[in-house]
Length: 171
Image 1 (cartoon, rainbow, N blue to C red):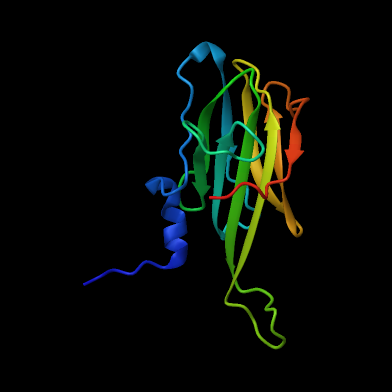
Image 2 (tube, one colour):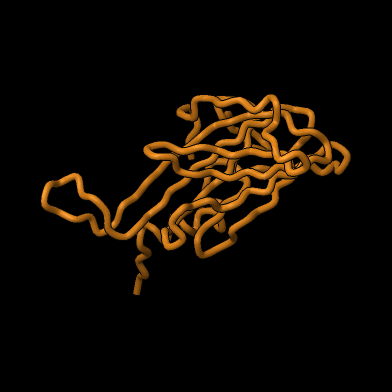
Protein backbone atom coordinates (compact mmCIF):
# COMPACT_ATOMS: atom_id res chain seq x y z
CA UNK A 1 0.00 0.00 0.00
CA UNK A 2 1.39 3.39 -1.01
CA UNK A 3 1.39 6.13 1.64
CA UNK A 4 0.38 9.63 0.51
CA UNK A 5 1.74 12.65 2.40
CA UNK A 6 -0.15 15.96 2.58
CA UNK A 7 1.65 18.86 0.87
CA UNK A 8 2.28 20.71 4.16
CA UNK A 9 4.02 17.63 5.60
CA UNK A 10 6.33 17.44 2.62
CA UNK A 11 7.20 21.14 3.02
CA UNK A 12 8.15 20.57 6.67
CA UNK A 13 10.39 17.67 5.70
CA UNK A 14 12.48 19.71 3.23
CA UNK A 15 15.16 20.76 5.73
CA UNK A 16 15.63 17.21 6.99
CA UNK A 17 15.80 15.71 3.52
CA UNK A 18 18.04 18.33 1.87
CA UNK A 19 15.72 18.28 -1.14
CA UNK A 20 16.81 21.72 -2.24
CA UNK A 21 18.98 22.95 -5.08
CA UNK A 22 22.15 23.48 -3.03
CA UNK A 23 23.52 22.85 0.43
CA UNK A 24 25.59 25.36 2.37
CA UNK A 25 28.93 24.18 3.74
CA UNK A 26 30.31 25.96 6.81
CA UNK A 27 33.97 27.04 6.83
CA UNK A 28 36.46 24.85 8.70
CA UNK A 29 38.85 27.52 9.99
CA UNK A 30 37.74 28.84 13.42
CA UNK A 31 39.91 31.97 13.12
CA UNK A 32 37.96 33.37 10.17
CA UNK A 33 34.35 32.61 11.06
CA UNK A 34 31.37 34.33 12.58
CA UNK A 35 28.16 32.73 13.84
CA UNK A 36 24.53 33.27 12.86
CA UNK A 37 21.75 32.21 15.22
CA UNK A 38 18.66 31.79 13.04
CA UNK A 39 15.51 31.93 15.17
CA UNK A 40 11.86 31.16 14.34
CA UNK A 41 9.80 34.34 14.40
CA UNK A 42 6.14 33.73 13.64
CA UNK A 43 3.54 35.93 15.39
CA UNK A 44 0.88 33.21 15.64
CA UNK A 45 2.27 30.44 17.89
CA UNK A 46 -0.32 28.01 16.50
CA UNK A 47 0.57 28.64 12.87
CA UNK A 48 2.27 25.94 10.86
CA UNK A 49 5.41 27.47 9.45
CA UNK A 50 8.65 26.79 7.69
CA UNK A 51 11.40 29.39 7.72
CA UNK A 52 14.52 28.72 5.67
CA UNK A 53 17.92 30.41 5.60
CA UNK A 54 20.10 30.01 2.51
CA UNK A 55 23.54 31.56 2.13
CA UNK A 56 25.15 32.73 -1.12
CA UNK A 57 28.14 34.71 -2.41
CA UNK A 58 26.17 37.08 -4.68
CA UNK A 59 22.80 38.81 -5.08
CA UNK A 60 21.79 36.40 -7.88
CA UNK A 61 22.04 33.46 -5.46
CA UNK A 62 24.31 31.69 -7.91
CA UNK A 63 24.59 28.01 -7.07
CA UNK A 64 28.02 26.53 -6.58
CA UNK A 65 30.02 24.42 -4.21
CA UNK A 66 29.23 25.19 -0.57
CA UNK A 67 26.30 27.60 -1.06
CA UNK A 68 22.54 27.15 -0.71
CA UNK A 69 20.24 25.90 2.03
CA UNK A 70 21.83 26.38 5.48
CA UNK A 71 19.09 25.98 8.12
CA UNK A 72 15.37 25.63 8.64
CA UNK A 73 13.16 26.29 11.64
CA UNK A 74 9.57 25.11 12.11
CA UNK A 75 6.76 25.17 14.66
CA UNK A 76 7.13 21.50 15.46
CA UNK A 77 10.89 21.19 15.02
CA UNK A 78 13.87 23.29 16.01
CA UNK A 79 13.10 26.91 16.93
CA UNK A 80 16.75 28.01 16.62
CA UNK A 81 19.68 26.88 14.47
CA UNK A 82 23.31 28.00 14.70
CA UNK A 83 25.31 28.35 11.47
CA UNK A 84 29.02 29.18 11.09
CA UNK A 85 29.72 31.66 8.28
CA UNK A 86 32.90 33.02 6.69
CA UNK A 87 34.03 36.32 8.20
CA UNK A 88 35.51 39.29 6.34
CA UNK A 89 33.64 38.53 3.12
CA UNK A 90 30.14 39.59 2.06
CA UNK A 91 27.48 36.93 2.52
CA UNK A 92 23.96 37.05 1.11
CA UNK A 93 21.16 35.76 3.33
CA UNK A 94 18.08 34.62 1.42
CA UNK A 95 15.34 33.92 3.95
CA UNK A 96 11.88 32.57 3.17
CA UNK A 97 8.84 32.09 5.38
CA UNK A 98 5.82 29.96 4.55
CA UNK A 99 3.07 30.13 7.17
CA UNK A 100 -0.27 28.32 7.24
CA UNK A 101 -3.10 29.25 9.60
CA UNK A 102 -6.58 27.79 10.04
CA UNK A 103 -9.46 29.93 8.83
CA UNK A 104 -9.22 33.37 7.40
CA UNK A 105 -10.75 35.63 4.82
CA UNK A 106 -11.60 34.05 1.48
CA UNK A 107 -11.11 35.86 -1.82
CA UNK A 108 -14.59 34.59 -2.79
CA UNK A 109 -17.44 36.65 -1.25
CA UNK A 110 -19.55 34.69 1.21
CA UNK A 111 -16.94 31.98 1.79
CA UNK A 112 -14.56 31.38 4.69
CA UNK A 113 -11.14 29.91 3.98
CA UNK A 114 -10.30 26.65 5.75
CA UNK A 115 -6.63 27.56 5.69
CA UNK A 116 -4.63 30.62 4.78
CA UNK A 117 -1.06 30.54 3.47
CA UNK A 118 1.37 33.47 3.62
CA UNK A 119 4.72 33.34 1.80
CA UNK A 120 7.43 35.96 1.81
CA UNK A 121 11.15 36.23 1.15
CA UNK A 122 13.98 38.68 1.70
CA UNK A 123 17.57 38.97 0.52
CA UNK A 124 20.09 40.91 2.62
CA UNK A 125 23.88 40.99 2.73
CA UNK A 126 26.63 42.09 5.10
CA UNK A 127 30.26 41.37 5.95
CA UNK A 128 30.49 39.41 9.23
CA UNK A 129 33.31 40.23 11.63
CA UNK A 130 35.54 37.35 12.87
CA UNK A 131 34.31 35.87 16.14
CA UNK A 132 31.06 37.88 16.19
CA UNK A 133 27.64 36.31 16.79
CA UNK A 134 24.63 37.58 14.86
CA UNK A 135 20.97 37.05 15.65
CA UNK A 136 18.81 36.60 12.52
CA UNK A 137 15.02 36.36 12.46
CA UNK A 138 12.46 36.73 9.68
CA UNK A 139 8.97 38.11 10.31
CA UNK A 140 5.84 39.09 8.41
CA UNK A 141 4.98 42.80 8.23
CA UNK A 142 1.54 43.45 6.78
CA UNK A 143 1.72 42.18 3.20
CA UNK A 144 5.50 41.69 3.22
CA UNK A 145 8.25 40.58 5.52
CA UNK A 146 11.40 41.87 7.20
CA UNK A 147 14.71 40.39 8.23
CA UNK A 148 16.15 41.42 11.58
CA UNK A 149 19.94 41.08 11.87
CA UNK A 150 21.75 42.15 15.05
CA UNK A 151 25.30 41.81 16.29
CA UNK A 152 24.67 40.09 19.64
CA UNK A 153 27.47 42.05 21.34
CA UNK A 154 26.03 45.48 20.46
CA UNK A 155 22.32 44.71 19.75
CA UNK A 156 22.75 46.78 16.56
CA UNK A 157 22.49 45.71 12.92
CA UNK A 158 25.77 45.49 11.00
CA UNK A 159 26.66 48.94 9.60
CA UNK A 160 26.90 47.54 6.06
CA UNK A 161 23.62 45.54 6.12
CA UNK A 162 22.08 45.92 2.64
CA UNK A 163 18.70 44.96 1.19
CA UNK A 164 18.55 43.34 -2.29
CA UNK A 165 15.84 42.22 -4.68
CA UNK A 166 15.06 38.58 -3.70
CA UNK A 167 13.45 37.65 -7.04
CA UNK A 168 16.57 36.11 -8.69
CA UNK A 169 16.72 33.55 -5.85
CA UNK A 170 14.58 30.43 -5.67
CA UNK A 171 14.55 26.93 -4.27
